[in-house]
Structures are given as C-alpha cells and as structure tokens.
Amino acid sequence: MKNRHQLLALLAVALILCLGMAFTRPPQQPQPPHPQNLKILPKDIDHASLIKIMHDFSESLGFRCVNCHVTKPNGDMDFASDAKPEKREAREMMRMMKKINRKYFGVKGNFVDVYMNAKITCYSCHHGQAHPAVALSHPEGQQQLPPPPPPGSRP
Image (cartoon, rainbow, N blue to C red; front, side, top):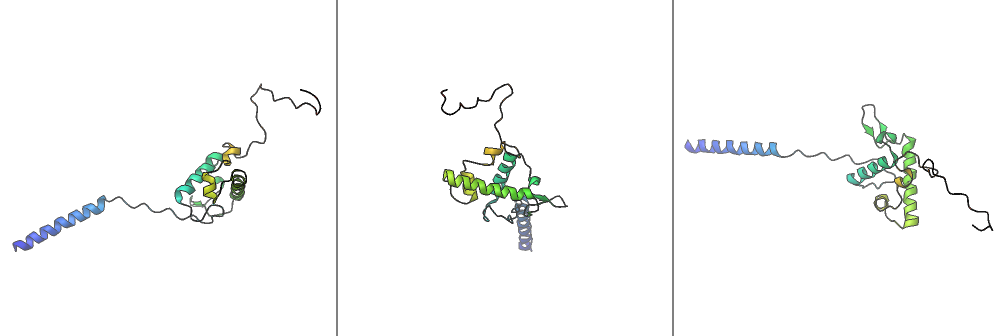
C-alpha cells in the first residue's frame, strides 16, 4: 500500500514537471509561405534575402508594397498576382539593372548575387523617387556651365 502511494506521488510529480516544461517552451514560429510566381528572383530565394531586396526597392523608389502588389478584399497582400502594370515594369527594371551590372561591371550570378554585389541599383537613378531625374537640377541662383565654344575656336 505504501509503495502504491509513493508510485502515485512520483507519477504526479513527473506529470507536473512534464506539463511545466511543455508550457515554458517557446512557441514555434510559423514558416513564411514560399514565394510564388517569381520570374526574375531565383525560385529558391531565402526569406531574408527576399525581404531585404523588397525593402531596398521600396526605399529606392519611395514606394510601398501596394504600389506593385495587389491587395485582396480581406486586406492581405496577393504577392503572386501580376495584375498591376507596376509589377511588370519593376521586373523590366530588374532585368535592366542585372544586364548593366553584368555587362559593365562584370557582376555575375543569379539576380540575388548580382543585386548583393551591384554597382548600379534602383537608387542610382531613382534616389527615393518613383521616376528617375531626367536632367541635373541646379540650386537656385547657381548658373549652369556655359555652352562649349564653337569648333575651331580657342577657349
């Protein structure tokens, strides 16, 4: 009878310890969904690289996610949708940036490799604006350089 009480007490303590450990373990973070419909970015891109590139695009263009990505009726983003023309434009710009960096700076690899080692990025032309500047701006009051002298004349 005494052994039975000791066994029950031991089982109760073990149960309490197991329950305590189960409730103190941090909850598992859900894995982010694997990106869909990638056309320029590599299909096996890791989540951290994808987020870094998207944040860089956002800062370089002065954009928010909704500028290129569709918002579903429930408020969630539909990142896979190609409904917005801005997303197609962004892909063309990504191709252009990759081509420039490969051709003129010898940066090789997939888009992530090129992007992480790029000499020319979205920011190079956009400077945080949706549209790149088409001409140099001069501070007010400062004159532009005079035109070059005619051919054959001396300066």
